[in-house]
Image (cartoon, rainbow, N blue to C red; front, side, top):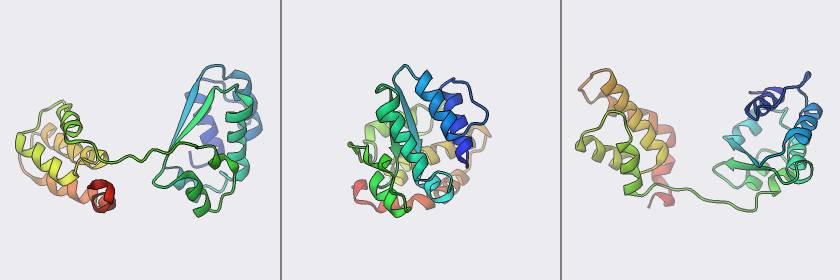
Length: 189
């Protein structure tokens, strides 16, 4: 999906709408405007990566999405962005000026889970973890969902392979390194 056409096709396929040929922005707008008759939310994760790496996702593209949400779908379309900074700041830092990024009036800052929530997540493993492993995972992750996922995945893979060593811990910590900023942030406190 590292192109405008790829993203537009993916959205239409996900909405179970016919993909036009060519699947350009004009045809995409026509299909969604005519066929979207039910409340729909499009979730966009890692959008800053797309803004940085895909020049086809230019201001004209984002202005078209804003137009769909505000004028062409009878209030049936909304967007949710997952990004480490506000949509306006993200747009500025990547050189975009589209008013699309101004339509997000509500920003929620997500932090770590509570210990109870983290324990519930860990307990959902198809193979139970020992109490010692659970405590280690909680301590190392500080209950951040992404870090919990990494550590739990490594422990589960280790158990599925029938291994009883602690190599999974080393691998989990290695995979956590790109996200060390979570453990240093004020939200972690």
